[in-house]
Image (cartoon, rainbow over all chains, first blue to last red; front, side, top):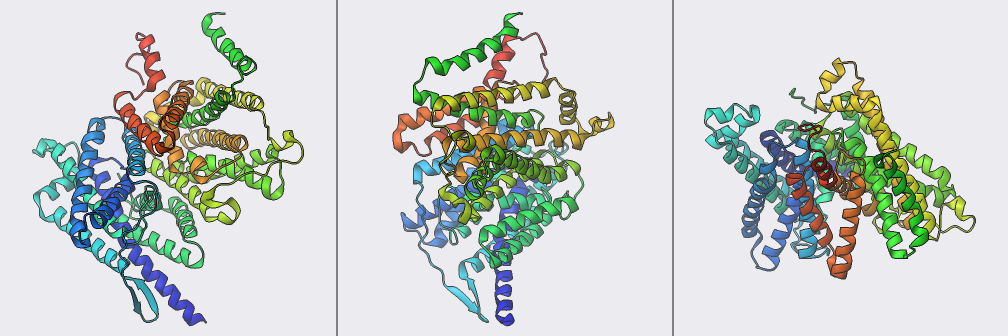
Length: 290
Length: 324
């Protein structure tokens, strides 16, 4: 009896790690935006939702294969991210941070209702059913493995971009000192747009991966949006490594909590853990003093 | 007595007399909703005006509505007892979340995100405990078989109108009471510069906690009233991020720094939603929120003080210019 239980436990743990990959991707995108532009996109998960609809229509209506639709979706959401910055954030850059936050909250409303108006409130799915992998009596869905691998590759690419290119270096420099960099000849406006597009692209990648696991509906963002914010705060806003670690911690809690009860209780457990952690490490898991 | 002093009393008297003269049920229904939501928005603005932007108020409202209804249905506890219990539950939740935030200087973005998560989690808990709360299908308090007064269930709109009006007036009174208290200056100092305020002898954590608990208590009362009036609650209408954002939106539209701002916001948003709903018919699913969202973004960019706030500022351009 106990042996079977351990298998389930192991399976849940591995699934937790796999879930953590996508969450880490989302947290990275959000942290990037926050670290560079000092804005939190409340509507980040809704960008993912739009991307999921993009995937759905590209695959279902235009008959594109999955791997052809994915880059288009990533570009689409990247453009959306840049657009969001230009239309909403740029006019508010000198406004109080709270106003920026609330404006993106308004965008959340807009995106959700645009999706409701345009696509209806039916649940849709891509209709791609990936096989389930069986390994030592444990079951892992192929889609999660794919998501994990793609999320890791995406993060490595971002890392390389940030450390190996001129623009990436400029982005990191701005996140360290927002006021000095314009004096050093860096065009901050251009960097902001690039960063927004990059954050959008990460959301686009996440949407390509999540579309394999979730049904699509206008409010799907709510099922992973709040948890992404928790991860970012727990990791320390703008702290890339902290967000990465926190994503896996949270994914494990959700996955293991879901093993004993409903998935929602996994979320509740994760929240309780979050509150406790706030008492212990209020500035994030790997605290960076600002 | 000037007009300025008499004005509120005359307006109040007119509002009390109104339903006895004019009894169109649909319009009365709208006014009741506006009053209940105005009260909720006012309670949000109590915190919001001191730069304590909380997106967790959907959570407090959900706690107020669901705890009251659950106590009534499962234990037969009258809302007269259930509402205070629900309010203390919301206050407790507020303290559990807000205390570490304030103690450890979690402000600005962090605070918004933590409270955002709070309302998301309350939504999840309500959905997860679907055996008791009905989950996303919603929940209905049992119709009373005994006294209507004991069950706080009234069939006529007139009673509800007067209750909502009373609660709304109390909400405004609390707003004004805070406005005139020393705490207001302390909280304004805190919102300007926390360290300086602390250095000047303000107990930062305690002041913030006080206003948060007051705000949470009021919001949960609004939730309970909404539940008792509508006799139907669902996680989406009383809790979650969208309700929190709805509060923020209405207050921003009306005006964050004036006492009647949230009320003006409620009038505008609820009438707007109704007009859109009636105008578009059943096809309008989503359209009202679309207009909401666009307006919210436009308002924050172009009119950050809200409609009433901007009008008041126009009216007295020489006083307090350049402040706020």
